[in-house]
Length: 592
Image (spheres, one colour):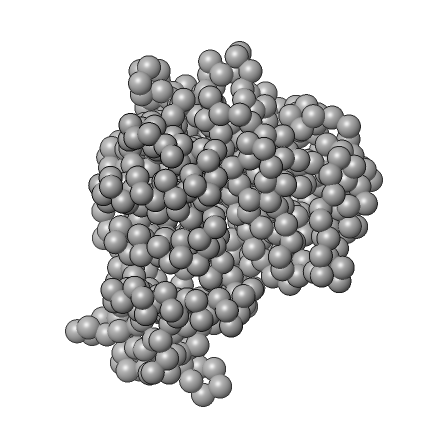
């Protein structure tokens, strides 16, 4: 009798946990889009709703489950002007997801003994040399630095080149010469001292790989990575050859306009030049998981472990490492003109996902990833239950905190709730989820208020026991962005000038930082974005890029007169500056 009962219970249990079909899971994902942080009773969105909300023409989704690509699906229009529908073989630009694939290739070369990971890159570069200075004299730049963004190198990213533009060689890109539309790639900070994202560093890695191998980069990557993994649809060719161009999606910019000429060319292939499909990119993630377990025929386990070992700021040799409690994910996001991509996969288990779109809305991709994560029960993805804010936090957390040398964060209470406000931004409610942690809707980063040296600080846990600490500001201490947010432009400009003169190597007053933050601010607060870009132009008046960005900002504000005036300033500094020339042509105004 006891045996019969046991069998019956097992049979019932087996029936109860029957797995959904692939079609049922696809449908659940399509109807389960969620923000970065989900709370109980929050409604989910449909894929169609969010595509319409953001203006995303097409999306490709690939889901990894049980160590293989479980399913792929495409939606919408690959080319909305031509009316071409997206299909599984539609090619999307991967943007910076090109980097981990390129890094994988570099690590294979290192595994073969053809590339030195920890030697001065100039020892193996033959077609160009990285100029030395007082920093490289103390610490030469290595491939390890390049792949981990710790080389102290300039040039964050690349805008690419429209179809009718002249395309520079890789050496011209690195020197900022000829038709190159970005600054020279140079070391301006001690290599190994800290993490700073540099597409320029990956462009050096690209040249290093081709110099060592004696092959063009697309052919080399096909031999090292794409063909062995089975990424048969993928290529680093820029521009695309005609037979693959026929399968390429057309990009759409954040303002809803079409990319001029449908898509840009990226000679900076390792940094931004991969054309691929959702399925191919998922096959790459699966291969990395296999390599981590010692089951890859392309990369051995020791090399994989070194590649996925975090170096600084949660970044390894090619991947961002996302620690969610005990769960470790590797991944990367990408942005080219009119295209975005996202890859994320669990390091130790066989699941993950890839999302690719022909638009520039990373938030949409995060919502899709979350839908997959909740449907498949990924470790570290949770639905939070908001709890009353502890009385102690209500009394001790409020204050102003130093985010960096130019930006302050204000925490304040309002009717039993706590809000966080970056100067110039929008308030974000901090919802208490227990264990002394707060979460914000839209940002998957916990906020805590620990005590340090007898004073409450603002902190972001980074995983592995590390925390990003932001100290409380004294009542009379004012940071430059606070003046700017309050509308006191010239007081802010003076504060920025003082900071730049006092600390010339301070990253938060670099041209790159101010320009990037200003452009990002345009998405939520055009007036504040313009103010930040005005500061950038005033601090770096000889840069065509700062005036061009300011012209773009005024154009977003529908101030054509100011847009033209600033585009003209950009062209006076560089008569061939591509985006300024394009803008002036579109505004039908004669250039100087």
